[in-house]
Length: 310
Image (cartoon, rainbow, N blue to C red):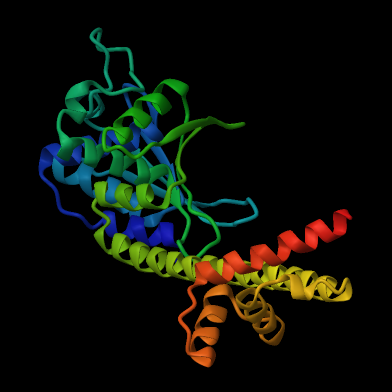
């Protein structure tokens, strides 16, 4: 089972209050339903989503939905579950905030009462995800969560509801419909909390934390490697300056302290400045700081530059 499938399986088993079930059902029908005044038809490839719709409608309205199964002959060859409701339809769509004031106009954006507080908004978003959402397994190379909806108006409405929680979701036009999506790993984790997929959150956070630790270690290793390469390049340049000064018979122009640093630089070409300062301090029994070593190497460079100019 995919990670998305596991999330949907988890949220399809949640127990809620009646009013939350209504908001969840509204999210499902707003996202993916053919709504008429005499019937409501929903299609899904997810069995848990189909069972969830059947259960909510049965428990709240005492209406038994018709479920048919057909083969989806696309490249996935999944089964498609079609849930059709033919009884109490006006009552249901009125409860779900989908019927206009005239009693005949079906709205694709529900009334505000459906998302009046955090619990109802959470249930509504959960319904939307259950029927049209997907999220990448955090083990994959990129973080991505999306919900596919039919209209621009509903995409904006859903985005705004999601962003009430500060999740920075965005809308993208697609060939068929609109995609409301989240790319940031922390925001995706927070989204799963909003829809109460808490087992999914724990799995997601474990994998995300592990991946970020690995990435951090890689960045540290890369920085260390870059520093080593930079240090070696500087050391090679310093040694060339020392050899150039000797070739020009100008070595005695350096004072004794600078000569000591020059000798140790040639002797320990792979050492960093701080390592070189520690070696000199121990072997000469004279305290020499990294700053002193750097200052004396700069004197060597200055002399070599002057000799090159002449």
